[in-house]
Image (cartoon, rainbow, N blue to C red; front, side):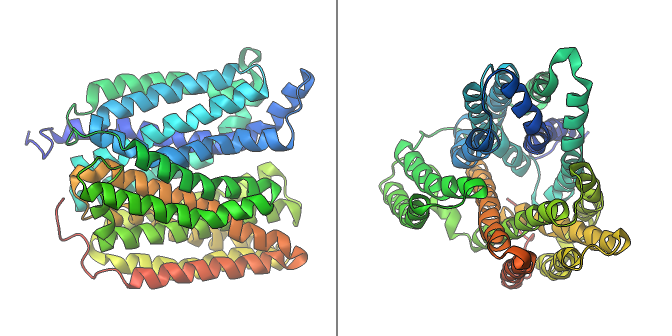
Length: 471
């Protein structure tokens, strides 16, 4: 059998790829499953004399996302230095251990600490997935492989809340909500065994040192940006949070200036400034940021309004989302895989235009009082297809011309940008939704459509030929 660019046969590469998919499943399921488990956690801790209300519940959900977002760039850089395989195994091991600690936590404080540790381990694990794919496959081959992310990601997104409900209802061995974390133990162990056997031992250009100054500087800037947004999702933005948020661009600018100075002096840096000199990477990352804000804002408002304005139960709300998830799988797994290499930027342009009508139509249905699900289902299916054919291509487009030496750092930056976009979406769209009461859905539609218009314009600015270079 012919050998590939990584010195591996196609079968070996496929085994490595599906090992990496495990990390995607762990990441998505763990984010979606927690919302199902929170009420059961509150009841359990209350029965044992702990108050798991307001702030504590908020940080159980947000502690993971915050640690994940803050440490992604460092996780990517660690992969560049020590190798994607080694850091993938470390991340999976840490994630599995932290999941067990979540499952055995005796009080809310320990559970929050374990969730933060889980997010930190996820930030080490997640960038290696894209980094190893970046190295194993050329830009066009990545399109087909990344299409699997849409299929598996869509299934994992659907399965998370359902699996959480089933595990809690089954109350296996009296574990209750703890089973939603402990189930990661067998999955994590299987991923460790598969990763040890199937991932290539040399997948990056090793060497270099960790940029401690840059890590702390960018971490402070991202914390100033993400902490107020995460808090604001539940508690609103107070004066201190607003000041911190306003200071974040200055901190980010200072971190960037320090990074470029250290790079010119030949000192270690958290990522090579040359990455930002690539216009395709910059534009792709910006599209990802804006789309992530629009998509997260849409899903948040849609789910909340279904329950608060139309009286749907949580289960009914989850079931209504099935056409959306099916559309995502169709968009990523079929349309994107088949046509992105030929359509290039026009797939992103058309997807942005489709989402203007699909997202707007789904929310307009709520404004109209929910006049029959038969009218909503096509809008949700189209929303999923648009989401899949826009979000799926963002990574292969942004990384198409990135040098493989910087694969880990580029992947970490891209995932950090998407995480920031999600936080911005909740803050921007959520604020418009809650601030205007009865007119909140209309205000949310306006913000979402403006964001999608930005994606449309940026997609038009992309080069006509994207996948004509091999990296």
